[in-house]
Length: 237
Image (tube, rainbow, N blue to C red; front, side):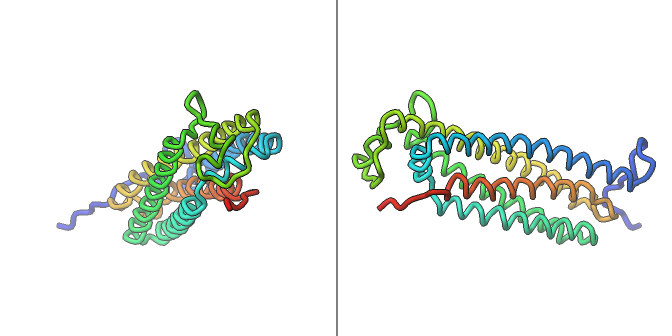
């Protein structure tokens, strides 16, 4: 006797008239959620641009302490994960279960690499005393030559403002990393369901909605990378 291992799902929940109505409602809910996320990150971006205008020299000096190669590598990782997620959505829609599982696993892999690189960056900032607070070291900005840096020295009051940059850096990249961690957790759940065939019968709303979430996370980083790492950088020598 043939045994069907696919996860059996109802066509739609009882409080929806049709499966199409359920799908449209879910998609609308996801777009509404993303709208709130846009407003949240928009506030952070506005604060960053405002303080950068006020403390321009401090922000330039602090930005020069970020690693462009690591930031660029993470950008490639996110673009790759976004591509895999897009292929995964397509695979779900055309009912290619094996390809869907592979693409979700690859998306998870690239996401984990991104988080790992961000950990390396955060660890370096801890070691260099770039964490805002009592242990923040402004001397490297007041007297960069003593640290082997060919930077323009900042006045003490402006050097203190580098903390504002790093506060926003950790707030913005930290919230982004949190979204990545949540996304990876959801990806593991989707992979387990996809392997059981939950999305092989035309029911693909969870994959599509998660794809919207993941692409939003990608887009946020595509704004964070140039703003934090690239704008108004100057050579170290």
